[in-house]
Each structure stands twice: as C-alpha cells, then as structure tokens.
Length: 285
Image (cartoon, rainbow, N blue to C red; front, top):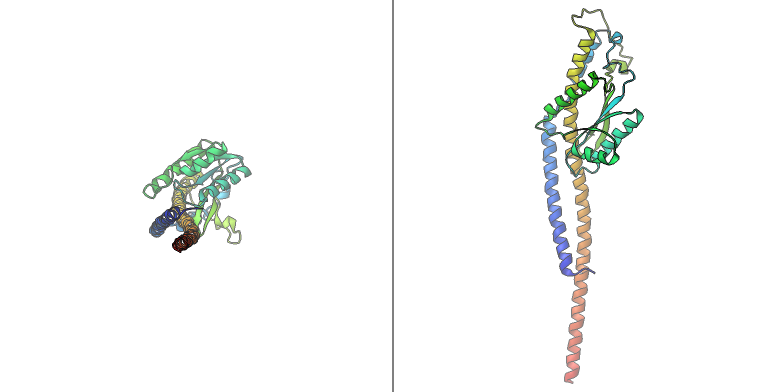
C-alpha cells in the first residue's frame, strides 16, 4: 500500500503533467489554425492543364508520364519528424509497404520517423528530411527534381505518394495519390468525353506533356506537404486529448486512493488514541 506522501507526490505529478498537456494542446490548435489559413490547393492548375490536354489528342503520344510500360513503380511515403502523433506515421509507412507489395519498386521516405520505422523492416529505401513550413516549397521542388531525374534515368515509371490528409480537425486519413501515369479527369469519367480538335503545335507533343506535368508535379508535392503538416498538428491534438483524458482518469483514481488511505490513517490514529486513553484510565483506577 502506498503512503500518504507518495500518493500526494503522484497527484502533484499527474496535475503538473495534465497542465503541460493542456499547453501542448493549445499550441497544436494554434499551429493548425495558422497553417490552415496558409494552405492553398491547386485544383485550378490541374483543371487548366487538363483543359489544354483535352484540346489535343494525347493518346498518340508515347511518353513515360502517360504510358510507363513495364517499369517498376516508386512509392513516396510522407511522414513527420515529430512525435505525439498517435501512430499516424506508422499508418503511412504500413500503407506504403502495402502499395509496394502490390508491385515491387523503389521506396522513398520523407521524415525521420518514417526512416526509423523502415530501418526495422530491413527494406531498402531512399530518405529525405522531414517537411518544415519554412522550407516546404524548396523541399517540394527538390522532391520533384529528384523524381524527374530518376524517371529520366529509367529507374522507375509509375509514381504514387502516400500521405496523411486531414479530413477534419479530429479525423485524419492516409491517402494514396497517383502521380504517374498522369490520367485526365475526362478519361476517369468517360461521359465527359475528350474535346480533341485540330491544333497547330510549335513544339513536340512529348515536350509539351513533360513541361506541363513537370509544373503540375511541383505544385502537387507542395500541396501534399502542406496537408501532411496540417494532419500532423491535428493528429497531435487528438493524441494529446486522449492522453489528457487518461490523466484525468488517473487523477480521479489517485484521489480516491489518497482519501481512502488518509481516512484509514485517521481512523487508526483515533483508535490508538482511544486505546491509549482507556489504558491510562484503567491504570489510574
């Protein structure tokens, strides 16, 4: 049985830790709100590129971005350098490994946590540093350029990116985005139909495709990196909230045990006091 002093120390520690968790929750909320205002998506860019592609007949183009053939695939797993994410990084890594099992290829991981998890699997991978808001655009360009160079060298063809996406402030979901082969929305939804017409192209069709996809890929990486950071803050808040609830339960149990031990101690002291008085009274008589 714990003593009164040890239980009191446990209560003080639990309350101090609970206060710290509250502060960390507030920080996570503040970071989420601040980044949410900065995050921009680029649906208009993709729609613009697709609308251009729909004006020409790209089905005749033999480009690796459209038809990678039998080349191996590459999987990019976007994880975080931070902890307190409640297993979100592990979910990203596991999903990346599932995609790799479907079709063997090259694994690229972003973030220290992902690197730590993958080292335990003994699966070879290429690693990049975790995403930071200050360097997010530069990191997106770096990843885009690396992927382009690897594709040009014939290292892989198809490309997928696995990343955490914030569905809401309390819900995150790991998603798989297909980068390559590049597929038009009109081909995903045939009812819209392509609008190919006769146009005069001053550049080779393959060069146009490569340039436009090159631009789109950089913006897509930038967008996904931002969403991953947003999911990180949201997941941290959820994990901290769960920890806070557990601390409250622990505090309640410690209070009950503290008062029980205190009452037992008071009761024992009173019994000993009365016993001593009775003994003293009997000796006087």
